[in-house]
Image (cartoon, rainbow, N blue to C red; front, side):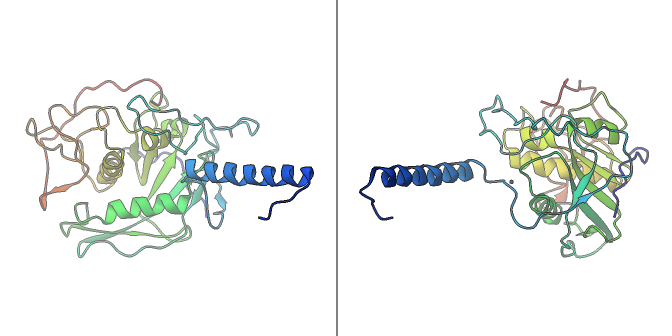
Length: 282
């Protein structure tokens, strides 16, 4: 199955007495310690069955030089631990797609099915693990399925889907969002919900809780697929509606990841702010 990455329009014992035996024992101990330390530092390393690569329908972005290793994200200025996820500025333009089918989230409303895929070139991130994170956010009772208007279900690589959540490198994000100059934000374009891996790894400076920001990022872009436009902060000091462009600024509101707050939909006046988009990806 191919993933269409073209534009659709807006919207990882016993001690020996000989010298050689001691050297061998020391070498073995050193190897074990080194392996243990590496695993402890890299909790997100790929595990389980390899998911086959899915060729992209559009091949306008050149594949990265195979001799170059992806850059590992440095420690963010906010002081968070350096992530294990690594990515180049430009990925391969092809995607590996999660194969597991999930349960239907939501008790009533229109059913939309979605796939989840990760671009080749993004390292140390298991596509099935990312898909579980996406599904957990979209199934949360504070999310889009919480008020009975929508039901959402994650499907596999060969199943029909109403939209696809794509985790992409910054340059691929620019191509899929029809805006090559922007390597910072994420977007929704047609039936593609495009999540920029740079934001998944770094978040944004004004939202210090990375998990909260990731929930927001998914809910905001999926909200566009559900027909929602941008909104403004309704009240200073209150939580920001999820359709506020919190990636770029809060404008007096506090960070919020969820469409429902206190069990009720939180909305703001329609519109958006003229916030500048940072240069680069972080």
